[in-house]
Image 1 (spheres, rainbow, N blue to C red):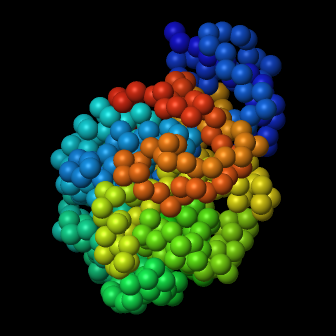
Image 2: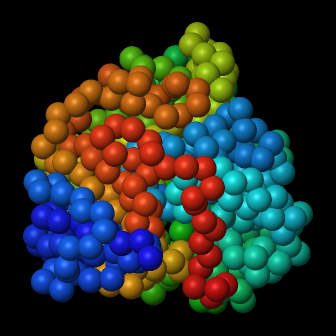
Image 3: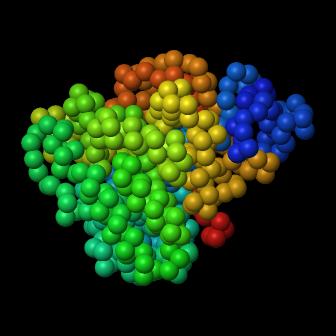
Length: 447
Ligand SMILES: [Zn+2]
């Protein structure tokens, strides 16, 4: 039996923060507070904050098929360094995309060999695979991802509204959730000037708002369906989600650290590393988004970690349209939330834990095994030093391409140690986890 004790940390619980010791046996939290006796390995967490390990509900690791873009090992090394103990990986950018049960099996096989942290898989919803959704659901996907605009990759076509409406009905029958990339293709310009700002102007916030409205119309015919809007970049989009929710519609929304950390001015300065869709917005939009986070109208925060080979970013140096759109940010979620949230705007660590761990675990059926510090839960922790000031240097970056918009950024608050089911996978700046430790997690219905 493997045992360990985490001593002296400030533990972030759903009910608040308190100093407490935690005991772990065989990868599961076995005792808490005054119940804890010294046993096995002792981890001194004095002066540190113990958060539930992050459940990052939005990553793209591109393997099998495009492992040169990132791959499960590099991606989960980044996860470990970022305090992320479970990733929910998207169906697109790998080849084959996860739109059939066979593709699911293929991805599980490679991820099981290479992942350092636990993982769940999204299935894809594309125009020609509605007949595959049930088999994917039986395999244990955490939900289905669909695009209302072009995804940027040929083997993952967008769903017209009519197909989405039918797909939502299938999802309702299966009692699963549909994650939607909500931008209206009809409102997006597909070309423009060479500078980053042209990319921003081509994809206005209004295109997000319009797509969310159309999604809500599509949901009307699928009674009881749950939809989740991924990477909302603007308060106007969140207002649509919130208004529908107040009327009883089962809809939730995610935002990402890059929309909270950067503005269009940063995009002009940094260039293609910050290209993504929806695009980085202006200062006023970012501040309004922070207000939504602080006001509790954002359900969860995921990284949308989506790297590519360095050359596919460099192509856009002189013409932003030529660059791949996607941000390598899996290591940045906690530093951004600690620096720009906790320190700068009074966000609480309880909210950080909720937005990054508890809420995604609940939404995707992994709770209470994942997403909370409680006896009986998996011993997944992100132990952070909230006071360390540091600069994100290239040697800290795990992503394969070496490209990140965060390089050179200064943060206050750093991940000190990450544990996955009781095993330390990252400590003192070093990834110590081993490929093959990560396990597939399935929503509660599939176990
Ligand atoms: Zn994505």
